[in-house]
Length: 527
Image (cartoon, rainbow, N blue to C red; front, top):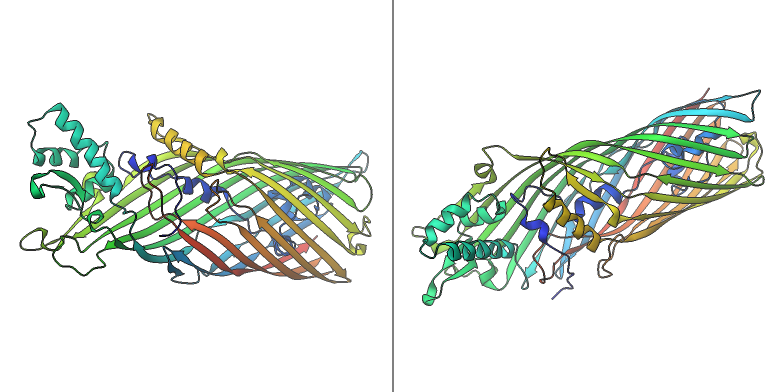
């Protein structure tokens, strides 16, 4: 039996189960690695103290204070990834390579000098960046002798059945089931399982029991296919000032735009081939979208105590998102000889939600981020053409348990979101992220190397996760034109929960290993 981890499962029991926020939804919006320009990516993303780069707008806005002229930049890119791993002893695999287009930092910076002030220059920037890419297509399968997707549905109906019987002992089982199908306090999967008789009342042997046909087998074959799409694109407006080429301060206002879609199909089937045990398979499919926008603020400072040394500090406020989700699902169940003649039953969630996908509004507040960085510049002179290179490093801290959901409805029920937030507190922890890189100049040609490590956000040590990036690139600068090309190789680990079950039962999960890379090209002109 595979390792399992305990995480609270109160989120499953929400009304409709269409209010689908889970700890994973918060993590998806916060455990991200922005694209940046090719130069930024080549040095591991370490931009907390270096400056002189448009990507500073999204990392430490004080860095745009190094500009004293105008620059226009565009950064197209492409990625190719593949996911492998395991689920309960079986291989997990990606159905495609998740190839796709990336947009690195693009936009313009306008800097100008001040002749008669200790504030020697100022700069503004307007830029756009892809801060998350959600495209992924994964599939995994395995035999599970510990738990079933249907456990929560059976347990939830058992509680409802017991309560109705206590209130009215003479109420028939058929009447209770009919009432349950219209009961808004029951989750959609529970009502769909009742509708297709996947969850049923069994009176075999004269003892009445609430059962799940799948759970009765003791072992089931499980398949999970998840296809996700979309991303987060952030538009930012930055401003910075330079005092005596020693102190740089800046800030940026960000407007991230979110579009996330997920289509998933989870299936449990009978691995024995027994045609008389009243269960062949069930399949549960979801179509989920979440769209909206947010606002945030980034503040930073860079200090040059001596030539060649730059020290940086940046704070990213929480992003406040206003999001709208739409959710629909369907269930198909084959109970073999449960009925005569046998039928394959199916139901759509739309019959419970007014013949339309369920729609909810909710808010998400992400955690603070704190960045400290240092750089050493070889031959630090005002004329950057004469500089010979640099070494730079960042340390970033964020606490993923600081994420917080709340209702976006005018009369929303905060009880559900309080349960989700408690689950986030139990599931996640604070983590440090490290980035380091360097550049060496040869007249008009530059070479760059970088490394980045993003620590695990999970509180439970059983869950092995990390993001790790190895990068290298080349740059060309001459007569105000520049071209940068970078390759970033990814070595990421993560986990995926096909479903969650109620405590004190433990949750099963798939381990995923993502490998592949990003190619980023930046074209720019200085005026």
